Image (cartoon, rainbow, N blue to C red; front, side, top):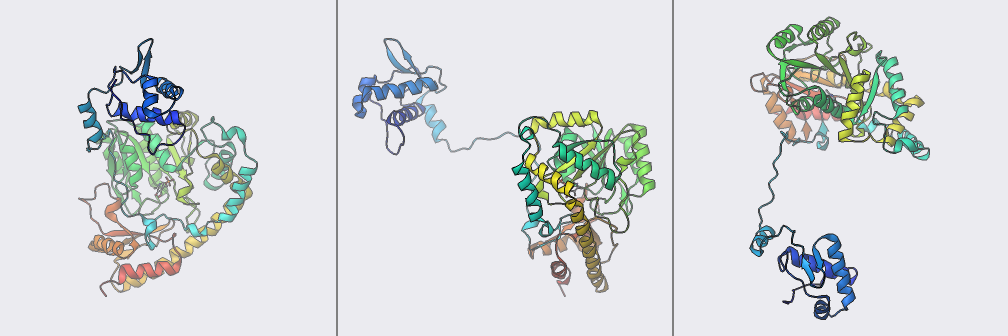
Length: 481
Ligand SMILES: Cc1ncc(COP(=O)(O)O)c(C=O)c1O
């Protein structure tokens, strides 16, 4: 029997395991081929200067793993079923430097190149100021969640959400958003909600009507189901109902995606008359509406309008919301408020992706909400964000006076200001990004960025303190002076 070239150098562990690993490598590298005989235990023991029992233990290990087989009265052989053909083939496989080619079956959208949070001045609209978050206060609730854990919930099981959190969300929705009698499904942020809704309610051939300027992550979730997007014209009040009617007559629209309280990205509030008109159109064509109410609390002129879902006799409005703005985006907690049938379907589909949303995080949030500190914090940050809105508006007026800004309207709510800077929006973004300032222009939010004009930029005011806002604005608007 030809000797095998086995190397035990740089191998650790029990001797028999070192030997079985070396034999495995010898087989992989085609020193012995499938069906070929291996040295007897005695021969190999002599070669490796060890005892026969050690070799037999190594062989037993390889038999158990399926690399080799033992044939009575004949000896040990490499398993004939191993898919290793010839030594040439093996050399090709092991030495081939061409990496395996993945064949993706889904459209993969590019991930963000410029991560807003890495910029010194971050004007991304819709960013909360995480420095204001009461981490110590929240940590006490996390501690409590860990000290008195709900052991049943920590196990596999109910995937709708942590019951005490659902209870708190229901109380909050009833009191603060006039929303009642709905099932709640807790999600890993609104993005998960959007993705699941797209998967269970849309298919190829369907279309989603969306504001012509809007929230790209939602659009991408809809596209992932095979549906197409139809941009509906909008004006200074939001989506135009007559344009929606026209689109419905031309496309197979199955769903309408809306941000009625603070239109994304312009932040305008869809007036009552338009809400009613859009609802009527949806009801008469049996089309569902996704109402994305992502920053409800941050309304400064008056109480925020109640969601469309609060006046939904047909039950066609799917209400989604998030804790990303109230707390911080990394918390990954959001929810869907819908009827029982849809809630069950959402939970059933979500179980394909994930068994649960993190229970300790939900538990701590439920405790924070029940303590009253949550609403106190909301009142505090709403006031601060209103002051920042006012501050930024005053600063921006200076740049109207020196001709850098054409106009803007003080928003009634939201976390950003939509500013008309004329035709040099794109250059402003380029310049700002080069100078450690993150801003986005109108094109970034347009469904059809090529044929539409690009005259606006969007500046978030909530995420930074006034001093930083002032310095950042100086960089954006003072260049070229
Ligand atoms: C329109 C809109 N919907 C939802 C969200 C929040 O998404 P998530 O809950 O996935 O963080 C945002 C955040 O920017 C948003 O702008």
